[in-house]
Length: 200
Ligand code: ATP
Ligand code: MG
Image 1 (cartoon, rainbow, N blue to C red):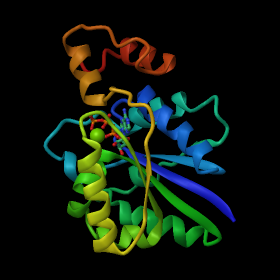
Image 2 (tube, helix red, strand yellow; image 1 turned 135 degrees about the horizontal axis):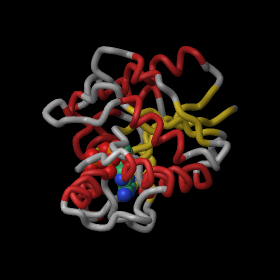
Image 3 (cartoon, rainbow, N blue to C red; image 1 turned 90 degrees about the vertical axis):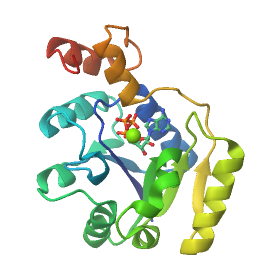
Image 4 (cartoon, protein in one colour; image 1 turned 180 degrees about the vertical axis):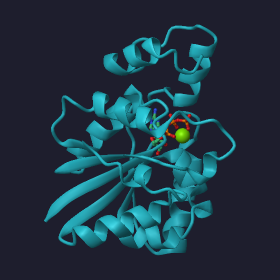
């Protein structure tokens, strides 16, 4: 059976933390492909000004160019309504029924998964994968993981990888403050952000 993952995110901008966990997932889970899915209209980020979807898409495309098992989809960007993970997973399950679907997330997503629309359905549509991320104690993570597993009667795959303290929020903040962000982003993304004066 083919094993594929969807890696959803705002990717505003995509950074090396994203690429690092995607690559880890590829190997640790033996995936055939990972589909990067820039979100169109993320319900949890309605209050913030998000960079145009086309630009975020282009930055992701640029970032994953060298790894042929990394792919990109504009499924959520093409949809004008709010992006919901359960909907995306439902769609991909329906078009590729013989594929085992995984969904990649950082631990911050595990912490608020109960607020995601139809979260119980998400666990039926994929194997939910959680990566460690700075700022969470192992005790809290394990407790939350067990709680969710009991609540939704599904197993969560937790991957404890070396922590990379990189977030798009911090990158945007640093750029605004004219601090260096070189090497936190893939080179092409860094150059694009600079050339277009994004996040200034
Ligand atoms: P923002 O600060 O704008 O929320 P972000 O860095 O969290 O940006 P997102 O696009 O929100 O990036 O993240 C997409 C997915 O990648 C989420 O599941 C998030 O938890 C995960 N992720 C992002 N950065 C890391 C990291 N450094 N380590 C592990 N997971 C990460
Ligand atoms: Mg985030």
